[in-house]
Image 1 (cartoon, rainbow, N blue to C red):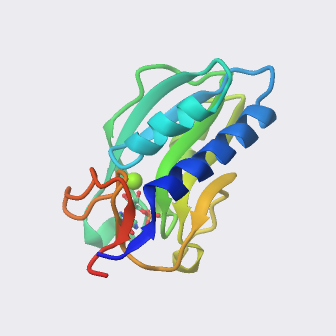
Image 2 (image 1 turned 45 degrees about the horizontal axis):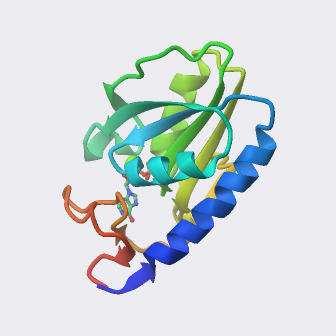
Length: 169
Ligand code: IMP
Ligand code: MG
């Protein structure tokens, strides 16, 4: 499969993102919420690249099947361990495609009253968006290709690849 982003490219970009985030959150303590399972490698590397005291939590969502997918309705499979009231919440996502999942998630999280709410996504496919959703920190904008590796899966496989590759490419 064709390498779209090598491990070295990914790591270099994450260091830049970490610096930018650390500068923006200077004097604060961001609370990073990673979206399982795809965002795990990114969450780990990004958190290490942010030179600030911070805390981590995880949430897992799954879409309800094709029929309701267009509504963006997703099911919370694993909720957060900690509350969000007054915190500087940074959602960490692997990829924003149609935006439906993130849009739903943002509504759920916003209702829990964080002080601030921002999003960091390693990848974004802007041409595929069905709903407008703001992504504050984007690692790489890519075409509407299906990619796997570095956390991203196809049928739960390929998450362990160090590079991001075009599936079937
Ligand atoms: P959404 O379409 O923005 O709601 O994206 C929902 C989810 O689809 C993402 O969080 C990923 O788990 C998955 N996804 C979207 N595009 C890709 C891809 O290119 N490779 C692997 N997973 C993807
Ligand atoms: Mg995901």
